[in-house]
Length: 77
Image (cartoon, rainbow, N blue to C red; front, top):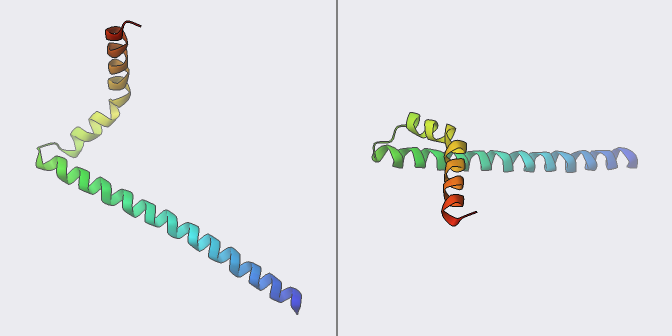
């Protein structure tokens, strides 16, 4: 009987930890979605469509590399 009680308590603790981790993931996902929606709505007020935003995010590595090389040449490295 005591061994079964220990296993039951351990199972409850593991279930609680898994539930807590899942809850944290859901909260993080929800807050990220809310932030993205707010950003898209604000940008749409300025006439920027979600397609424009996706295009710029796709071109972000090239834009950052160009910015880095221009800054490097202006500094003189």
